[in-house]
Amino acid sequence: MKLPVVFILLTVMIDAMGIGLIVPVMPDLIQEVQGAGLGTAALWGGVLATSFAAMQFLFGPLLGALSLIVLAVDYLVMAIAGSIWLLLLGRVVGGITAATQSTANAYMADISRPEDKAANFGLIGAAFGLGFVLGPALGGFLA
Image 1 (cartoon, one colour):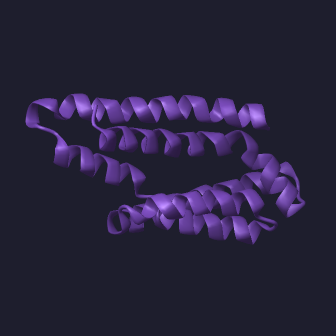
Image 2 (cartoon, one colour; image 1 turned 90 degrees about the vertical axis):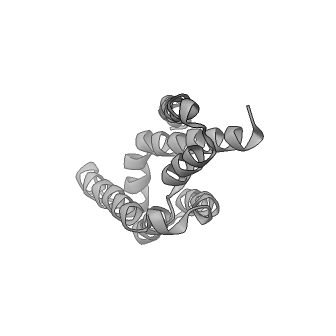
Image 3 (tube, rainbow, N blue to C red; image 1 turned 120 degrees about the vertical axis):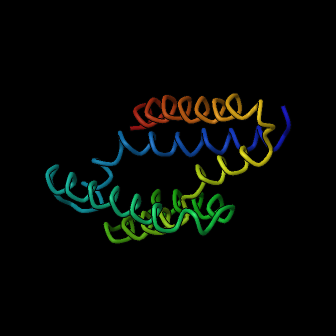
């Protein structure tokens, strides 16, 4: 397997791990940052997830490879956030630049011969699935 393909698959896996990693710790993180109860944390969790998804939808097609760098910075900001507003800003910026899935799919489509496309897209799906399994396990362990 070519090194660029391995890089793309690892990126997709790590991205999926990041999604799954935050799920088990997000309620406690929001409660700690906000200083409020579980109900308020659930509300802010929805706001954070929605803002990320909306920004990803709007800006994903525009940013491409820049998304990889900013996504790493987003996770760092979320790790050190001291307020709910910094968490929200991190999610908005992260969502704006979260084009790893579309970039990975576009790259795989560009490099694949017609007879290899299905197998290569299957590899992307497998990398995402593996990351989505490993992320919550790691997040639960760290929580």
